[in-house]
Amino acid sequence: MRRIEANPFLTREWTMSRLVLIPLTAGWLVTSLAGCATDALFADDKAKMGPVTLAGPVVDGKPTALAPTHHEKELVENVALDRGRYRNALLALRACYHHKGNHIKVRWTEQEINGLRRIEPFDDAGPETATALGQETDLVEELMLARRAYHLSLAALHALYCERGDPTTQQWVKQELADARRIQPFSYLDDAGIPGGWLRPEESIPEADALFERAYARMREGGHGVPVFYREEIMLDALDMMRQVIYQHPTSDKIDDAAFYIGEIHKEYLKDQSEIAVQWYERAWTWDPHTPHAARFQAAVVYDYRMHDRARALELYHAVLEHETFNRSNVPFAKERIRQLTEELEAGRRSPSS
Image (cartoon, rainbow, N blue to C red):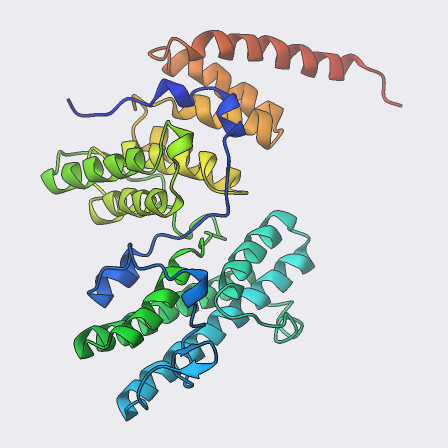
């Protein structure tokens, strides 16, 4: 059987009442490059050593490691410089969105900034004023480069400490790696991180099938469909694996399935990402108009209740009746919302302007 059907538990807007915590970021790039596992190595607050610096790991104000070698100093300096570049790029992009009045993207940048601030507290004053009028595309490109450079620097230092076998320095860098994984990166441009609508699910690829099955199992392990068992770091791992299905196997017949579940994760588990969720839902039915998932219905609900775009919601509810009658529980709901929204729009057109 090619596909996994959407869980009917998630086909009503009441699922939006589930608890949505501060999102974490899935760090497959960091962990794969570092060569050591990090999932079970989150330091508790009592053992927190602080961010990687040239001062070395410190607990209760006391150094806990030997003096660094020259090579280690270079790698630590790279981490600090790239972390600072990442911070400055975020501040500059936030200033750009403040200037444009794009309050949604301001919230996105602030959410990513707060994630980085948990690693190293910093003052907001700095380069953002001078670059407030910069071009959005240039600023987003700089942010993406800085974010990736920071992850690569951490991975290189992590690899050194794994090779050396020093448990203290390993724990030190693993802690920052874990904190970095908690930062949710946003796709600030429509074409940043979301492939275009020209992809098509053309062939069965065993590697893609296996990756998709592992990703879906990871979603279930993270609490998909059972909110009481929700675990953020696991869900973000699932998100990253779903994205890998698409980026590594763009012709796989699983890309629409992966797009749908990426939309589900953004809708149900990540804060302030309704706009991203509906883009992924749209990719699911654009890539495969006959996708067996309730992508149009889920997008309609988001437009209706979260984004308050009634016209777009009405259009998609009609599309549900045309393309998604396989999900019988959604059909009566779509019909009722079509009736209600149509009446609202007609009443608005009839009412005299004041």
